[in-house]
Image (cartoon, rainbow over all chains, first blue to last red; front, side):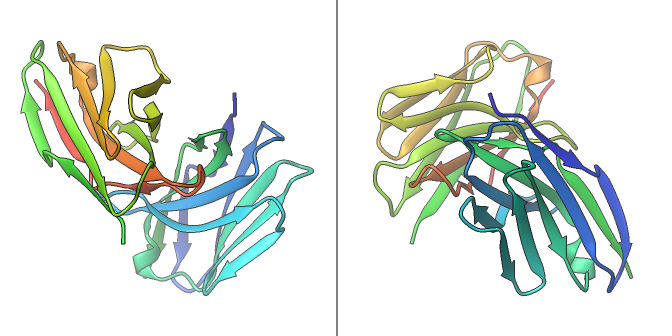
Length: 110
Length: 111
């Protein structure tokens, strides 16, 4: 089955700096890669996703890149703000289900 | 628009007691439904998923079971809870096998 590795597990950045989270996956048949943000005590929220026919997608301060050849994808957050502090999960689709990475705890220091 | 409900929101149960958590989705038909568990400070573990009424796929062998008696209802059960069953239980739905949307979750503490 699919295996998704996510790095780093924790990330501390200064407000205004950029944050990058990287994920690798094992199943070359996977073609959908979402990212979720989970604030403390709340449900994960889908913040952006990318499909295999696209190499990059942007939504305001958030961007995702996908390299299908290397089987890795990344989340980029620019101009970080304190409200970006949360746990972020990447995932890869395998049939009817998603396989999630282990999560990255992002702390934005004011 | 679609809405997903879970109840109860929190639950404290003794070891060995039964469990029933319910999830319902509104505003969509024939969704895929999922049960996840999240231990404190940890990632998302897929427990069960269903692509239709009565169709259940189990991902992790354990003392939990799932049922889908109606198109938009998904139930997670246990006959006897273990301490290790404590966690945050999340139900999710999708209609295109891709983007999944999570419910508010149930916090379960087994004592």
